Length: 347
Image 1 (cartoon, rainbow, N blue to C red):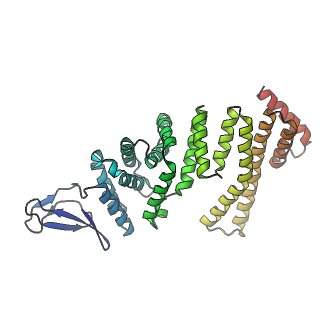
Image 2: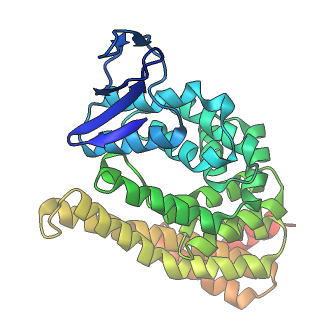
Image 3: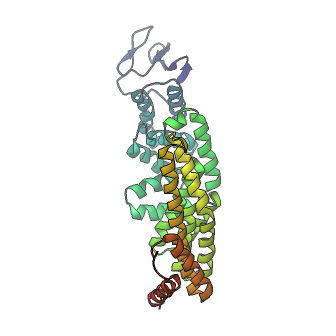
């Protein structure tokens, strides 16, 4: 049993011979002997904890008391020896242990995956475990696993899952930043958006649109999801739907890029009035123009496919003006050339 003490934690071990309760502070490995009868209490690498809840509590306690990375890992890895006997009652603690193992401080991804895979065995639609597994499979290019586990993720209770993820962030308190814990809503929206792109690229448009819609429900300003759902509808030849999302993308892009610029300035403590700050501001303005130019071009394509020629010409003209690729040519002439090329492309 792990018990909190000032500056650390203690492990209580009952002597099998005389029944005396012995307390040991810290995580030193090796033999321990009963203070009453000198009976060996456990051998090196014997379990210090009896449950996953004890392990997660001890890990948070060690983090709060600035224990070493080695000490915290020693606690967390105790769970590997218990994992085969885990039950559905252990799921919350299993998720916490896995999340800590996978964080940037430890980078014990392979060990964390064992916990998440066990959780999915116990609860096939567990949002937190599926989210982390899909992210891992994406990084490892395990496409079949992404495809299958992604389908389960689309059926999971992501709303309640985000609430639970926020709880973990609160439990970590000031340590959350050190451990690289992301905003659960943003990271989850980004993951569903990526999953939508994955299904779209594999021509499973129904799953793609489901994933994009979840991403946008979580974060309506997710520019990548807005753009990619538009691309997916265009591939499906549903041009009116594609146009609707491209217009939303055009609306939100300047705001989101400006937001990223401000956050970057704050993160790197850059004075906007400094030479570096002025250079960054000029760069973000150019990025906004380029992004708007690309979106307007896509809008022009949609309007062409809907046979709204005047509107298509207008969108393409605005796209060319923002791109500045044809500074010395008559824009009307360029627009007609582009329209002719698009007609050949989609004939």
